[in-house]
Image (cartoon, rainbow, N blue to C red; front, side, top):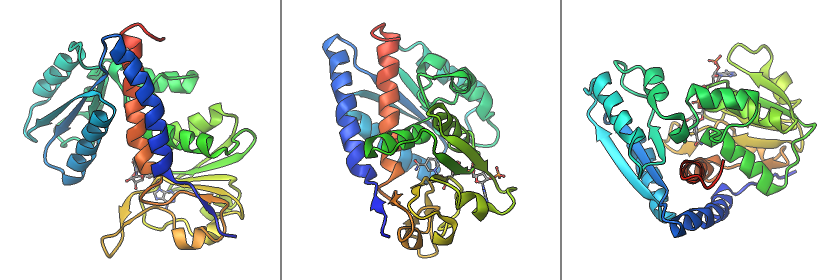
Length: 286
Ligand code: NDP
């Protein structure tokens, strides 16, 4: 079997066009959705991510503010920047690019963001809403995976979804979103015994491990849907996922490539969350 490729680039373009209609509708009512991206320090990967987010805002005709702060900024100064963005009426979404330098308490910084502008969905209020039901701001990568599954026409209800990884930004929210859609969910971690036994039982397998080519064809059930969240560089410096694409594509029914799978969806869902934040803050939706 050769798996069907889930083309994240094409789906992301389609989803962006759908959200542009909503952004344009807001603009027609005098509200331009605005995103502020705060970056602290000089991490080159973080700089690329933030530049891409700002570019995507421009594509949707949204307002964006890119705030670069020195790595020696104090916590009080950073909190003051966030307070200013919280009260800026042109800003509907605030993201603070992680990781932060060690002297800054990331939890405190995230909790300082107005939860109604927390478009990354990391504030405890929004995480709690996800646990108990529905959050207005699902965290962008797992939200993107859900949209990829939906747009590809993959049914979730009753399926066994296995997620490898339990981070707060990918694994845990992914599990909750799949659970809300009535999947039976297993979460695997570095402490899981006989990982392959679990992954081979998955109808939907999500890899969010951070290890290049970690999931191999032998770990996958024939016909399974395999979603690769990982972004890694291999020994040759090439961008690869957590899934060994060459062996898994011969076994799986569907597979996302890296690059061009989950990655483009993450930014798209950030745009979606920002438009939704603008709709809610301006009273045009709940
Ligand atoms: P973390 O490092 O925070 O989490 C990795 C998880 O993998 C942990 O829960 C860890 O378990 C688990 N793990 C590590 N080794 C094993 C193992 N041998 N067997 C089973 N589980 C294991 O990573 P993130 O969740 O932040 O990111 C995961 C990957 O996704 C990275 O490659 C990252 O770059 C990428 N990413 C991609 C995004 C995108 O837009 N496409 C967005 C965000 C991340 P334990 O908890 O026990 O340590």
